[in-house]
Image (cartoon, rainbow, N blue to C red; front, side, top):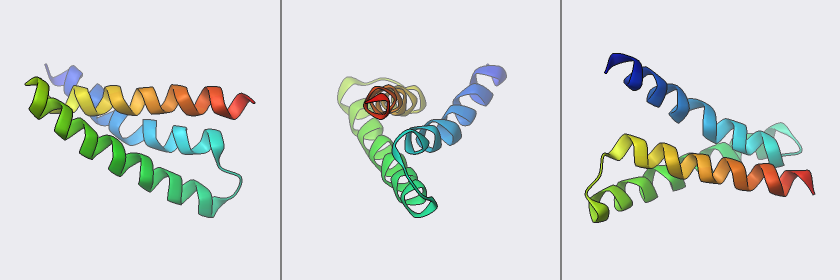
Length: 77
């Protein structure tokens, strides 16, 4: 259980920053996108976990992962 918690915490730190890195052009955009992605995934993850009655941490990480893959695909264009 401890390792799962460590993986979740690491994903909560890394995924929003990696998503922002995919689409930002300078440091200001990088910081702004990281903040936006973090807030969006956190709030939406809380709402989804409340409505579906699942654990909060994994739902936030799954939403952050969806954002990451979306920015990865968008950044390739």
